[in-house]
Length: 412
Ligand SMILES: Cc1ncc(COP(=O)(O)O)c(C=O)c1O
View 1: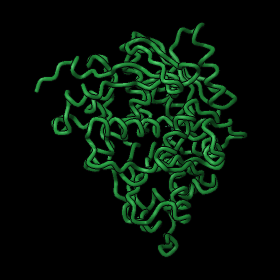
View 2 (view 1 turned 30 degrees about the vertical axis):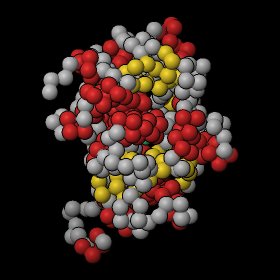
View 3 (view 1 turned 180 degrees about the vertical axis):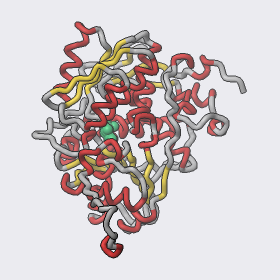
């Protein structure tokens, strides 16, 4: 079947998450009453334009879900080859936790080594479609590199602002991809304020998490892909490392859209676990207090830089999704992150980042509390590559003197 571009573009409008106000698509939009926007689709049109079977013929990238993405014209797609990421069964790590059905969806394979590529691929494509030529973003780490790479690919100018203690690789990658990069002696929300204040004088578009509507749509493809990889069913539990929460919100939206277009084999939705570190857990605090909006985290610190988000603009969207799914927001002990990261890397050969290590800590305690049972299908998102966290690894490697005889027994 030859599909025309108009058939493939099914966006109907944008919708304010806080009060449902409708806003027109195809125009530059940011927040409404200080809160994020949803992209809404004509899902009947999606159902007519594409079927699950059609996907088989398509390339294995996130763009296979074209009708559920907001870009109107194919020529505006800015891509670095966003491959479908593997869903890897983890028998050894599973055995360590007493599980048989533990899977890691390994997002570290994406361009720039993190899931941020998905959001930025769509957001930069939409920026191109809307005629934007200069973008700026605050970053806790990986988003800056991803934005810089996609902006480079699109021939746009980019500005990145990050806390001065952001992991080294994140600092250098942004510079390498040509972003004008600045270190700020503060937290990501201080960087965000600078980006906001610079909008007028610098004429850039603010690409901050959830302050534009399209990064969610890119992250949504994690959920679409997962469903397809599981034969259009969903796992019992998803554990997701939550900072700004775009990935969790996006996946929950994906599951809703898949339900509405009738692609899922059954009604079973996963319980969504928002996983944070004890060093920065504003969503967990709000969840425990039964609140819909989170108070800013005090003295936020964690080696999982992507989780060092003291204020999430989409806090209520994360908490709504977690509660609706009958999941939980839980924190793991900051001191355990490095151990879990090392253990997962050594047991499975997967380059697990410290953010995803938080999910393993949460999983261990939820299993001990009997909230997750040992026979459930469990998926953890490895949102980034371990290699990007060289400071956090702190490994000591023994040196051997090659001029002397080696004591083989001492190698262990
Ligand atoms: C590796 C990694 N994991 C998780 C997160 C948190 O992502 P989200 O904003 O979707 O909660 C980040 C954000 O910077 C990250 O870089």
